[in-house]
Length: 385
Image (cartoon, rainbow, N blue to C red; front, top):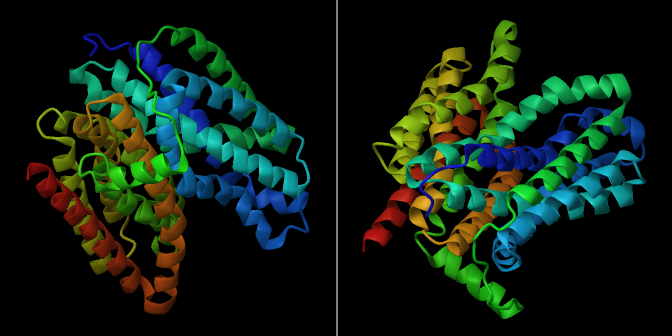
């Protein structure tokens, strides 16, 4: 346990997280331009985005187990170098089957980063700063998407699609070099237990039976199931004049609340209690949106409530799991459940919207968040007993 927090080093690890988020986002922000490059791809083009998430669903927990055995520093550096090489390969805009293969491998790199990086941040943080540093980590997706929209799209407009992949490769390679030196000699034990199919299955069972290791991931499942879906499906119900401004502000409001109010609340309550507060406020905001569809103020309040869940969910990992290996398992489970939620949430809510309309979609979202809060309460009762 450290007494002083090396904030500069933690920011560098967070920068690695931005690179991991860009492994998703770099395709999302240019997705509408890809049919011109791959005109015969048809529906298969969607797999360019979803393959990274599919790898996370299948191998999320395995990544946590592997990283604990390979070593957190080594796994992070290898994943950064691998991500740099894969982005360079994508920069040549290869044939679609090759691109899909590269995206699948990129899912492995992504998983290693999102498991190793938060485990290292928790290890490097003094106890009084864990809430702050883990909340900072929780912002990496939102910040990366904002940077890609504000900086990546102008880069593409000026220099073509390949320039975005090259810029991403240079970012990953630079961080691999810097962190390779900065993390040298880090005293963090790795697991020495050999891996086999039986140990993987055993550890899966142990993780999801544990009320401490699985709790952050289970809450994260319900959050991710709705967050991206709401941002995707709510725009038609917003007034035309403020639609773009509200949609652009919602992720930024979530980040701002998690980094300010969320961090302050973690000084006075546990991360799980803050998550429950976030779930409760989210349900209240959704009821508000049900009564007044598309109200901009209600949308921003919803984003603020979601920000409490976002930061506290990552802060719960080290609070509920003291050892580095169990933190890696918890982060692997969060990666797995997060990808399940992101993959299933939007199509299911969209299907409900098509059948039951706006009220049905919001009603399902209310049920999902209420179920998330109930799941956390149930797991907390299990921990107490």
